[in-house]
Amino acid sequence: MNETQQRTNDDSGMVQNVVILGGGTAGWMTASYLKRAFPDLRITLLEAPGIPRIGVGEATVPNLQKVFFDFLGLPEDQWMRRCNAAFKVAVKFCNWRQPRTESSSDHFYHLFGLIPSVGPLSLSQHWALQHSQGDPTALDYACYKEPPLLDAKLAPRHRDGSRAMYYAWHFDAHLVADYLREVATGWGVQHIVDQLENVELAADGSVAALYTRAGRKLGADLFVDCSGFRGLLINKALAEPFLDMSDHLICDSAVATAVAHDDDANGVEPYTSAIAMDAGWTWKIPMLGRFGTGYVYSSRFQSREQAARDLCALWDLNPARTSLNEIRFRVGRNRRAWVKNCVSIGLSSCFVEPLESSGIYFIYAAIYQLAKHFPDKSFNPTLVQRFNEAIEAMFDDTRDFIQTHYLTTPREDTPFWRANKYDLRLSDNVQHKLATYKSGLAVNTALSQADSYYDNFDFEFGNFWTNSSYYCILAGMGWMPDVLPRVRHASAAELELAQEQFRALKRESARLAGQLPSNYELLRQLHGTAPMTGTTERRPLRAAG
Image (cartoon, rainbow, N blue to C red):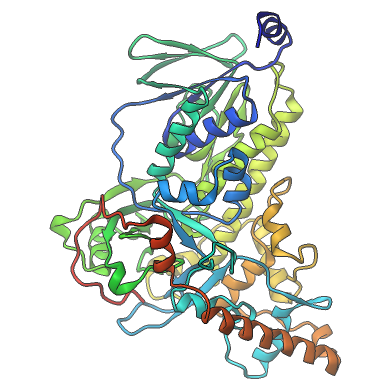
């Protein structure tokens, strides 16, 4: 860009300088995306030194590649190799219907993709009809091809790389941050390692500059707060209220670690596990050579010490030799994610427990919306308002979906589970969604193809979680929908068409079972080696449910 062009841009009122406060996954995802979207921006990322890291695994949802990595021009296999990434086809919910025992097989899958339709109706309605007539087949095993393949720990891709199932990813989020730091700084993002000391506000209340411990003054047109739960800019400097929603979801703490795993003996599961505990639930995120795990619990019903003991007991860890990351989190969202010239992204913006892998999704959804609504120096109020509406809808939709997991479980065996069933504050939307599901009206009418669904990322009105998602969770909990009269009036030809769809899913599952490699085999092919760093020793694994 020559001097004349630079002067023209400077005089046009365009945003020229962006400062991002905070590194980590949110900061470096934001830096790399904005630099790719707006190459002429001068972007500086300020990151505090010496923040300890324990890689305890991160799970994602399927459009991460389409929306984020494809936009950056980073091929899937390339970033997967750099980040010890593995495949995720579903969330497997264990013991959400009854307490865990050594021999328990209580589980169901929340799968990606939509339940097929048969004419004007979802196949789930034909499943509900059969269930009402005594067929015990679970919805996930009847309406999807994947569950038997997941039980066998098969990969979601063929050996040639072609896709056989819808999938997302597991990875070490710290490795992703490190990788994206290399990408972003290679594109010209300035990286400063220093401690924030003070925030200077302008006369209109916007952020004017950041001052660091080393004496730097960082001014910018736009500031992005990726400082985590502290919300150093959005909450502390600008005093934007954080809307606490711990009365909607009562888990507020976690203990977490990474555990060494014998892949040769046990394989690598192609799904996230969410294992219900006495006062919360434990995640298991498998990667090559190890898995990340953490116990998400409510401090109202469990002490940190008991949570640590329960997590170690679940995986037969030696408590004396296990290093645990202790996390206390706030549940809710900022009243506004964007205030004046400051946008909050990641934990500084909103948080809900990671039961449906929403953490990374919240980050890149917000980045996408920021790029879409990117302002000039006038900060058009309509752009800011539409951004805030999109983030609010995204968060509230996810909060409602997570809450349905607790509201519909039959478990009442501990005070925690009873409080979740009877004491939570419910939004009007979640009650409407539950009533719609119960009536049998929750069918896939607007979205008939999973490909088009996962390619669509506009998020004007939230609604990321589909009717199929609600069917997987609620039916999995044993919460049965009514059978629509329309199904009971179905002709013999319509009923036979539905039966053929059920049979076709089973045939496809059997066909793939004879072709697909194991998930472990495919990951070994992709990575070549199995990283074993940053893990905890353990005794032989016992049943997790």
